[in-house]
Image 1 (tube, protein in one colour):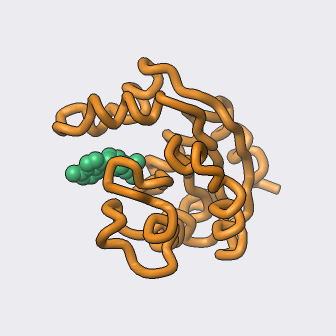
Image 2: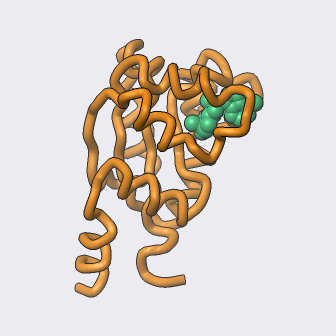
Length: 149
Ligand code: CMP
């Protein structure tokens, strides 16, 4: 494992949670769990960008609805820093389906269904790097530079 792996993940507060005014509460849970917000932006994805972002799910039956939903209103995209960032954020988020999410997790508290599940988090270091560079172009160059300090 190099010095970057395991330290960063990508996360996105989804349109349902943004529309419900849960941005502050979710960011507070993330920070209280020990993550530093390394980069953050609020934007609305175009349908084409949404299709690229979720391309890994293009064969799944829910792909079209997922892309339409994620492009339906603004999202908050961010890069989070912490040891074991990918695994720790997924634990904090809870199961994809909020009915299966553990008590105290973000999805248990804020999600209303598997489709409207409040937050996305990368599922691997590789996905974290790819998804971070998708929203924050040039970011891997910045990480390489800062990691040598
Ligand atoms: P996310 O972590 O953003 O990754 C893909 C999204 O697809 C997932 O959260 C869910 O919101 C959505 N989704 C809808 N149906 C399913 C399903 N059956 N399995 C996994 N993800 C699903």
